Length: 194
Image (cartoon, rainbow, N blue to C red; front, side, top):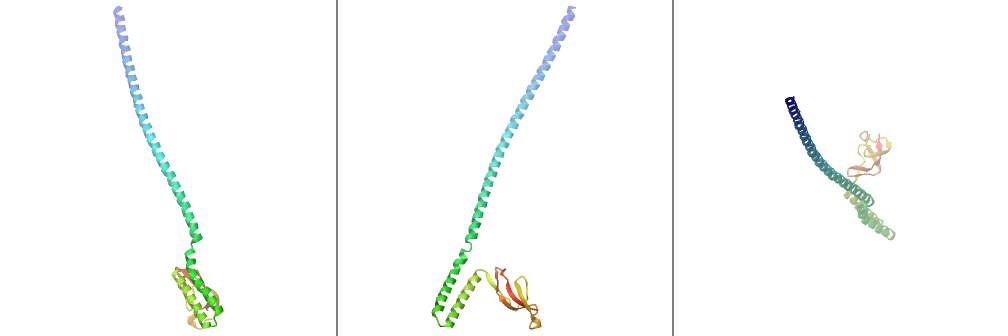
């Protein structure tokens, strides 16, 4: 019996030793798993910090871009308002010599008895003014004898054509029309033959 006990104790000790080894192995495996999870957590934390840093950089860049765009928008609105307000300054400044000529002509009309000289002076002022308009891109729409076109002309009356070839053509111009850079500034008011 004592043999048996001894063998039984030996077997129990062997089983306990196996269990201890198994527990030690499990404990070691759990520690390895915990270390691996800890390493993975560190990696995830590093990646998260990198992503936060990148997010902050992008957010800052976005905010700066929005501020720059807002400043650009305000600046262009201000420039546009100034352009609208003062855009005609150059055109008006260049008209002042024509006004000066008209003032001189008015003074001379009061003093002069020579109608031909006054007429010649007014024609010179008219020529100077038309030359200025041409420099600015304004051109007279030639009307008489041209076929009627609703894009360029406005018919104020129709009369029977004096010749069959003048049918649908402009016979007289009541008010001169003008174009500005090939765009109608004012339609010519015309009389059309029918």
